[in-house]
Length: 262
Image (cartoon, rainbow, N blue to C red):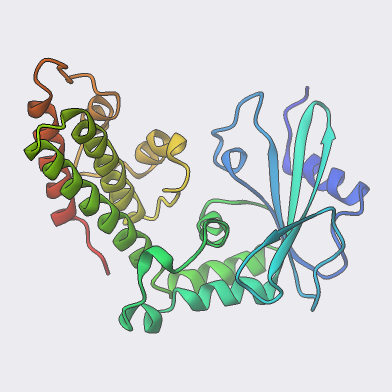
């Protein structure tokens, strides 16, 4: 199949009448937008509308917004699955308001601020591939930069990392080294996510892309080689798991001290 381009993506969506008159922006999201896709990857698109109501589409995804859902259309072309998700501009503004600095300073619990789909909608603004509506995207990115979104995601990942560290320590004290090993791995994943979130490489809900996000962010706190050694447990010795667990938890605590939360 010929390699997809923004022109033939746009032409396909227009030919199928999937871009209503009220379209403010349409953009590619997910792995394709980052150049991380492969031959089996889907094509995913977001379409943002200025309308008061979402268009009719086969699928509805419930969200804590007004209206309380987004809609999506799925079709297949040239051996690929295409999914178009429709958002109202007002829904994006609602999500942005949930991560305002006022909400952050009021002590809103970071873990419960946004549901996954809402968080993805903001994270994907950063690295999407525009088809139409560059002006809307520029404005939306400016709004996002003025929120506490980065702080919310960093704090959420740090809290989850700290919880897993405490689990690992307690399990190790009780001699439950199997569970402590798993908890240490979980703590490390959340710690790396906090580090990457802090540099604007969002995506902690999709750990499969963590190595790619790491390479894109290139954090100074830990090298990719060090990260990958732990991620793949290269130095883990089943006969002496305490050494590996202790090393991992120490790195998690070091990262926690290096990441800025605001």
